Image (cartoon, helix red, strand yellow):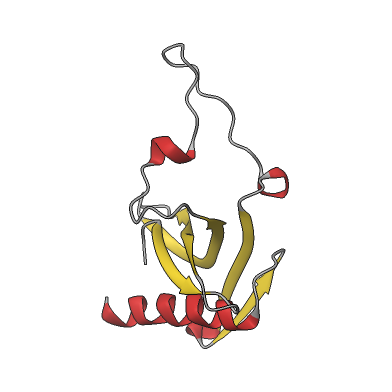
Length: 116
């Protein structure tokens, strides 16, 4: 998965929740973007499509972008999933999702990779 996507998961209480899954990329020497195996998770609205301008606020003055909110101060931050050993093992850090919610997200990411 090489782009940010919104995915719906079922919470432990049976309701659904939309999660933004953002792959962390690194730029290689040949200017190609490579996956790091790290995915940052954020709360999403009920909308199925997210526009970058809705995530990053832009100041009214042209060219003056407000600084990004760091994850530890972002109330929508839900943690990170780090895949190891070719995606067969994973670790969840800095978040509050349940194991059931995490397994749904991990399964989605793994299925997305197997289709590519």
